[in-house]
Length: 284
Image (cartoon, rainbow, N blue to C red; front, side):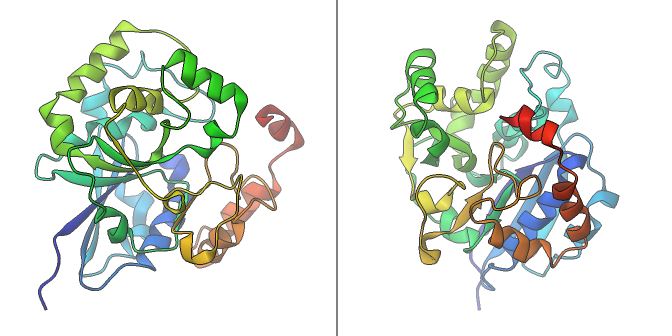
């Protein structure tokens, strides 16, 4: 039987995130369709083949994994981009996908702190037309009055438009046609300001009125309303809602069910048990 076109999926990760990335990719493999070809690319500046031995073991005839070194792309900006204690330079890697992979006109980008409950090809097959991205409104923003004020006043974006950049269908051709990568370099070299999520803010600004908004279930955070299992396609443990930091995180069952099937389970559980009161206070 003829297979469908390749489904390209991109993650960004450093060495520290490999245990959680492994859980994310294992959850993906658990849901793939036999008749699709999947290509997973790990964008990184420090991950080696030795770090992804377990991820490599998940490969199948129709599911392959590749490490992509982005050091050449970030060399000129790594000392200029805004960073915080809860994210690293890896948040910017997704912006280089269009030029690094000219063979693709469309791709999926996923943060590493996710678990999939559905075939990622279903997300890829969503039609986004000539828009920059397909994305999901950010629950963290539209449920918080301070964030609402921030995106309205600082970015001139409505909370009813502001999307989370951790789950994206990217129109790579449109990014290339509009030279977004060079625009990003100019932005980094022109501005110096503090922001909650600079890569996300940037994407929201350039994509304003050019977004296909998707079902909440494709980027459900452990906050706000619950969702029925059949509508819970992807759980995103964003911000500080990490099962490896806190007990009783909403939807943590899905994470631990997959984590238990990896060799990182004891390590991840140990991280949760050793997360100190001082660290939790700093989170607050």
